[in-house]
Amino acid sequence: MKQIKLLISVLLIVTIALVSCKKDSSTGPGAGGDLVGIWNIIGGNFGWVITTNSNQTAINMFDITGQINIDGTPITMDFMYLDNSGTDPSFTVMDAANKYSFLLEGNSGTGTLINNGELYTGIISYSFDGTTLVINESTMQHITSDVTVIISGSISYNITNIPANTPTLMQFTNFDDGDDVGLTTIEFKSDGTVTVTDVYEGVTDTETWSYTTSGSQLTVTDEFGDTMTYDYSVTGNTMIWNATDSESWCEDSATQTECFAGFEESFNLDAGSVTNIGSLIEFVFSKAVAKPGLNIGKAYNLMNPTKVIFDYKLKIDNLKKKSIESRSNNMKAPIIRGFSLYFFRSYIIK
Image 1 (cartoon, rainbow, N blue to C red):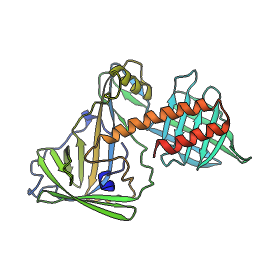
Image 2 (image 1 turned 90 degrees about the horizontal axis):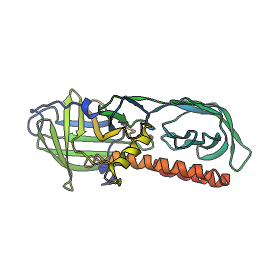
Image 3 (image 1 turned 90 degrees about the vertical axis):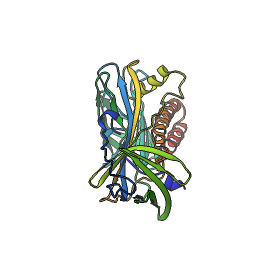
Image 4 (image 1 turned 30 degrees about the vertical axis):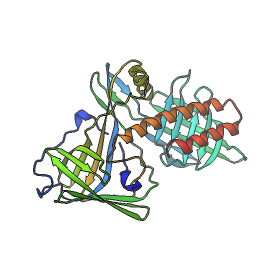
């Protein structure tokens, strides 16, 4: 059942060392404990936990603040990929809803803008101090007409300090694009069954799962026999699940060094400094709060929670690839460049 299997929308992750799970042996089937009842999925936290061999500061393309103004209208931006491979930095900036994005080539100032589906090009006047990208007022012209828009704004990375030899969270934020409207509830019953209800775009789907508990661990089994175990805690009306399984984030790389180098590039860390990559996946539930409008049904699977991390890795890899392709196409005709960025906009996030 597609919508049931892909649950939750979210912001993204806490370091493994910082998350503690409350042990409550009274919680579970037949115990009449805090677990029994109807819970609403209200969010989650997802991300990588990175360890380096030296004190560093890291940037995260999914953790930015700021906006661009298009003809005076402020647009919040959610992703900024910095490419430092050339002599000058280049940037790919997007909003989570896929309506606005721009590519800026640092060496020439050449810019390509997607403005609510319309394509514009021009020279962008900018400055970058290593943390904040400032766009001075710049005129962009429509790719097939004389229509112009003026853009300006400021976008900053939220810097994360990574102490040496200390696992540190790089959290995924700015993820929920708000396109999907839904509500997911999970009802734990004292007989060991779970009723999962997903209301998505006006359609209601229901599944019956089962569950068991052992100390601070909760194991859920769906209708297909798929099983997942979480560390869990219940505090008042809030319940938190943390994925307890681990994955090898370098299994698709030829070597661990190659794998770590990709993370170093993504987070602007020193070459050869990453010593370990881990992850944490956290789901948050509430008995008191129902939160409709979540981005349900895209990348979140309670039976395979690490899928969200792999999806983000793929998203980052695609973001790099399409950004490089778009800059390469800037040497060709503007319409080719525009098509490349438009393909990038429609392919990367969806």
